[in-house]
Every structure is written in structure tokens, then in C-alpha cells.
Image (cartoon, rainbow, N blue to C red; front, side, top):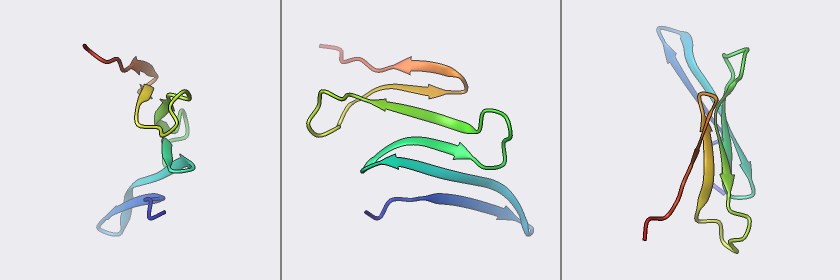
Amino acid sequence: MGRRATKVVTENGVVTTSHRFLYRGYLQIACCDRKRATHPCLWLVTWDPTQEIATRPLAIQKDGTWYTFYKIS
């Protein structure tokens, strides 16, 4: 699908960033930092299951806090 699976950044030969992106089908559901031992997920995304084509995330967890999305009419 051409999705990014990993991101590794090195500086002076030392790995400074190592992320793994997780997908369910074509939807990105998480990004995990492979260098962090405690709570490795940087973010988790919950998608709206009622949508035939997922275009609307319901919530995202970042730094241990959940944030919700809503539409302003």
C-alpha cells in the first residue's frame, strides 16, 4: 500500500529515533517508539466504525491523554 512502516533517524552513527507505524488495513492506528521501554506508543488512533470509508478519527491518545474530535456545525 506504500505506507511508511518504520522511521529510523541516526546522528553521528547513533540511532536517535526509531519509530514503528502500525496499521489496520489502510488505517494508521498507532506509532510506537522502539527505544522507549515504558509506554512505547507515541499515539493511538480510534477510527469511527460506523463509516464505510474511514475518514474520521474519533479519538487519539497522545502522552497518556485521550483527545476526541468533534464536528462544529
